Image (cartoon, rainbow, N blue to C red; front, top):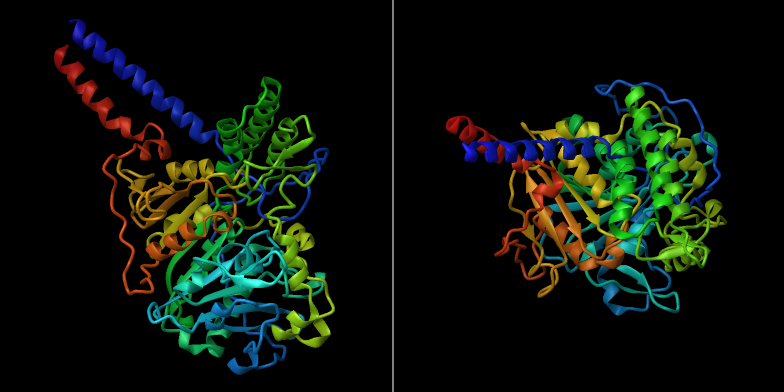
Amino acid sequence: MLIPIILLCLYICLASDVQTHDNDLFKQVKWKRHSRKEFDFKKEKSDGIYNLKRDLIFDSTIDEPKKNVTKKTKKDYEVIKLPGIVDSRLQEIKNYAGHIELEGPSKKMFFWLLKNTTNEYNNDKFVLWLNGGPGCSSLDGLFLTNGPYIFNEDGNIVKRDYAFTDLVDVLYIDQPFGTGYSHTDSTNYVKTYVESTAYLTRFLKNFYNIFPEYRSRELYISGESMAGTYLPYLAQSLLKQKERLGINLGGVMIGNGWIDPKSTYASYGPFINSVKKMTPEGNEKINIATNSCMEHYSNNSVNNIIVEECESIVETILAAGVNKAGKCYNIYDVRLTDTIPACGMNWPPSVKLLKQYASRIDVQLALNIAPENVNQTWVECNDDVNEVLSRDTATPPSVTLLPSLLKDTRILLFDGDQDFLCNKLSHQYLIGNLTWNGYRGFTKREYTSNSGWLVPGKSSGWYHEERGLGYSVIYNASHMAGYDKPREMLDLLKYFANLQDADGTRLVIQPPQNITNVAANIVPGFLSVYLHLFILVISVYFF
């Protein structure tokens, strides 16, 4: 009689543990994207959140423009000579850049296409990169994380090791209107993500008309931060209009993305406590802010990309974490501190060199920007674009699109583990609560270790993929993972897009000898279900 009693007690304890984990899952949430806006710890909350239905279907098509647009050819976009290059290895890069008009000169998007003329492989693949914000230029990606160009101490350009262009052609776009070199006045700023998706789709249609050689290639759309919202909506648009556009979507790759606001807002408290020692008083304030946010979700039909009632969580954590020197956490890399109220907006240091370079008139002219537009100081992140688009209450978070997208394409979510703003815990909550292709969360215990294939002899992260959804964590990497770990970023792209290396080989990830229970961290309590059932059956049998 003692054995069944012990087994039954064990079952009750395990069941209680699952309930606790499930409660934790539903109490977890998310916050602000890559912007250069400084924090106002005394900012008043704005009100007015609109109730939305989760199953809205948006039409991301826009009728062809009635206004005349300037027609250009591929040759018009050729960059003859890029100023500042001092590295002979960069002679292999062929550049095309300039504006593509969508509705006359007031609505145009800037792009920069980079082709590696020495690539003998991967001519069937093509990569698009977007930065976030909203309102941040994709030159961040080109110069700071994954492009072939990087600044030396003198502000000149040398080659980055492990650039995406080592293996494949890459297209960078400044969007929506008003971002980076995509100059316009404020009357042309898009007001919803659906509208921005429609213009981005039209841009790609025009791009393929100018560069038809890419039409037959498999397109991988990638980006970071707020691109976690841009990219799923773009993927939906491309899949919906596949026959009309003729674009073959190979997959979606999102780094430290803003995808599921609720999971991100809820993750802030637990994540910061996992990496920093917060005071009891600080944690009390964090819990109050988080509980208030969760209550707002419980009491309202909230389905917004940005929830103003929850934005205070980040400010609360930053204020609680101010050190004796009067510095706050860097929201993009919690290993670092920054001055108040920047808290990471001064990072990374090479942003200053990028601003100086991109503001040069000779650089803008070389990039085929019209003379009437070159006398403008380049702005990395346009706060006005950010402000307008952040008011969008008509577009649900992109997490709502993932189940349907995963029926037709592959998606990879990857995280630099030192990012706070769009941290790894938020995406583990997201995956644990997501149902796609017949199951909820990851179901397999095994995962694949990066040790031995990313940085030989040193584990640099891990990778797991099921039913079309991949998830990876890169160790010791920030919000801009490629800034810290360019080789790991290139390897992820190489593996996800099945790219061939310079010698024609493909990356094969081998499972490690000792499997670590990562899946249990992604889906708390999930792997205990079978054990519960087994113990319950045995208990009943003995009774």
